[in-house]
Amino acid sequence: MGKRKIIFSVINDLSTDRRMQRVCSSLQSNGYDVVLVGRVLYCSEPVHFQFISKRLKCFFNKGKLFYLEYNIRLFFFLLFNKASIYAAVDLDTILPNLLVSKFRRKPCVYDAHEYFSEVPEVVNRKLTKAIWEKIASFSIPKMKRCYTVSNALASEFQNRYKVPFHVIKNCPPLETETQPILQPDVPQPYVLYQGALNEARGLEELINSAKYLNCHVVIAGTGDLDDSLKQLAEMLGVQEKVTFIGKFSKNGILPYTKHAFVSYTLLLNKGRSYYNSLANKFFDSVMAETPVLMPPFPAYKALNKEFEVGVEVECTSKSIVFTVNELLENRSKHKLFVENCKKAKQHWNWQVEERKLLDLINSI
Image 1 (spheres, rainbow, N blue to C red):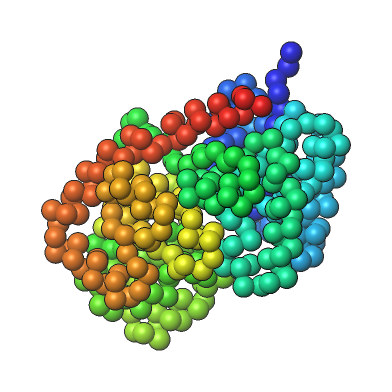
Image 2: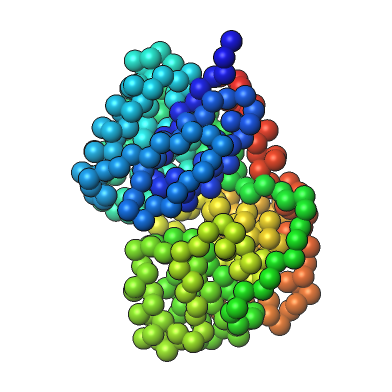
């Protein structure tokens, strides 16, 4: 009997999706033939994985026509590529996978990174939200297995769609050998934000707080708010206290994460996706032994109760200034968070989550 083949489908650029790189590499290393299909953009970097990857090119790159075109292209790709298991990653790839899996009479798996119809870009657009909810209500109950990134999201999905959701947290691997990491060339100490520069990430609040912080601010990443955030920093006269480092690679961001005073993961409560979320950078920060400023949302509160690795903070400039400046004064408290990160990363790592993933997929 040959290896079982799994095709995972995402709609984003494969070169930046570290969760799917981990998932696919783990399954490939444990006896599966894995194919990861996604999208290619003009600025996409080359990829070199131990599994097979396929990148679909679209004429449209945003809006309704993009989603329609990509789903049609994905449907025909899946139709002409046999697999033992079809796996949809997020709601925007679920229909082609469901249709082809039914045609092939093969199981379909759903990997939900977020509550798609509740993300800030969708939640206030009634018609768009209604369409995605119809797709979800039709498709999710027909999945063979479902899993997501946090207990809070799993509970939300189970209540909504009446099917079990497993939890595979998006943790980085625990490194067994540590080498000295050079300090980046930015003023110390600093608050680090790493990730997409998009709506409701608390970035305006962070920049507004910069004038009153007794430290520097480093913002790493790109997104829709690139220009407006830089303009805001200039308008407030804090451009000397805020460093934008732009697009980053996994290895490129590590020195910034490792040497940050605190990591910034605050969010505004705009939709149940963010309210129940659990950001990748939370675990990246803990793995780097960097204390975290986190929102007082269910997933973060539960983990911080398990190991106190930082402070739960309301996403307001006043709260940010008070919390960071207090930690700068109270270094013993900061050191306690660092020590707790060292303990937590022994439990929150990909080696632990990988076993859960393999048990789940092997059960199909």
